[in-house]
Amino acid sequence: MKSIWNGSINLGLVNIPVKLYSAIEPQTIKFRLLCGKCHTPIKYKRWCPKCKKEVSWQNTVKGFELSKGKYYILTKEKLEKLKPEKTDSIEIIEFVNSKQIDPIYFDKHYFVIPEKEKEKAYFLFKETLSATAKTAIGKIILKDKEHICSIESYKNGMLLTTLNYAYEIRDITKIPELKTAPRLSKEELKLAKQLINEFYEKEFDATKFRDTFAEKLKQAIKGTIKREIKKPRKMNLIKALKASINTK
Image 1 (spheres, rainbow, N blue to C red):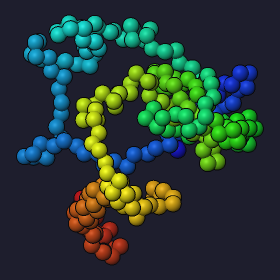
Image 2: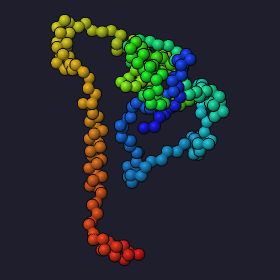
Image 3: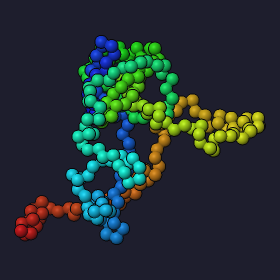
Image 4: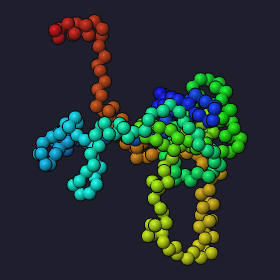
């Protein structure tokens, strides 16, 4: 496993050298879009409908649409100036109670690992977060973007989670279907609670859940591969050598 970021956590005058590893490894099956007739992979062209020709990457620019057909052009030079300055540190801004962050703010998860084994400052920080049930809130620059993030004690290490900004969260109260709720009778609530209790588990076990579609798809692909791979005929070594010479 390769680290995606190396730097340090800065807490006042305390500096904790760390590295980040992606905590999630999606197991999605990637497909190629093929021609329905000959099964050749489809190629896309960057086509300009006004110039009526294909445009190379070198001749493309990024633009922000101000109004219909009007764009603010962002050259590579302008973009470089606007990008946040790269830094190898995570600046801790504040601490909050661990259960205070609404899950809707959670974006991506990363394991926070000490740069060296038995890094005392790292484990002191981890154990203090655990003992106080607190989560650190900080800033980190990843992939040319400034992220707000949370750092919490997680199993035998720490977990960093990038957070969505408040203005990126849609307001659920503005969804029309939720404006008014129907009246629920005591009998309906009682039966619903009984139904929930029948399915209740004391602990959540994520390992018992599988993506059944992906599993079936993998089996189907494996079956096709097995059928297409022909077993080589067993041949005596001398015969094989002679056959190889005869083919030249």
